[in-house]
Length: 104
Image (cartoon, rainbow, N blue to C red; front, side):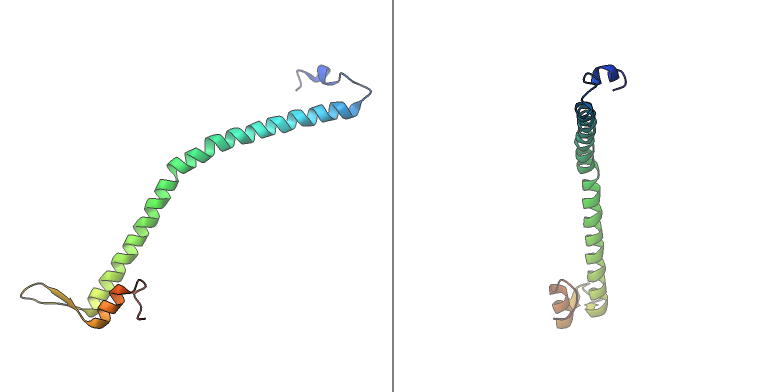
């Protein structure tokens, strides 16, 4: 803009046109910068960050479910020492079938 400042003052008597032209140049440059930032940042975040967040959420869900199953097996399960078969009483089965682990 500084380089073309003399050409921007083409109508000295009409300051509104010069101001409008300066505002248009600033708006176009700001819009172009925003467009470039969106084009570069959004796919980068989607490609790089979203899979990591998805894996982290799935891992947390798996760990929570494993902890719930361990708790139910520890409370309601009995392992037969001869066969190694684990049996669960009816209350434990009800808690296993319920997603929250609480009695319904």
